[in-house]
Image (cartoon, rainbow, N blue to C red; front, side, top):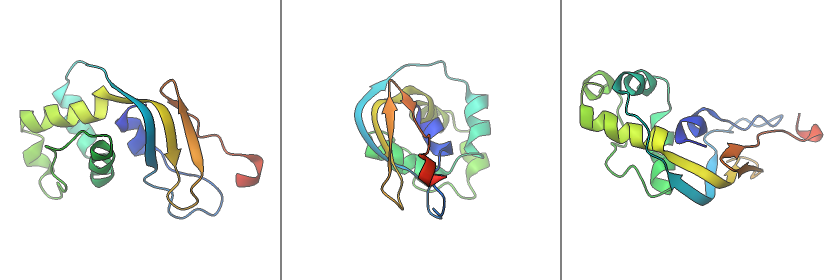
Length: 126
């Protein structure tokens, strides 16, 4: 599971009000090189929750060069190739292969197996 995917997931258990961001408990993380597409990364900057991304990346030992907050600087940063490359690395090249995503409110664990998060809810959680 890429951190781009992680940034889009939330806990949808009935009654949960604070289901984002999911905490990451990774047991296997790999880095897979991928083609750099600066236009795609620049478009994604406006769609992701930045602080959650930086926190997740740093939790996994990456993203130290990323700024904590980009509010009001998005346009300027999207013209900075080094920033876009660092963001590309975090969004597209870091993959969680095994572990769990944990709901911040309930503590419910959603397993990640072979890079695929299982976000299916149990019958009593719907």
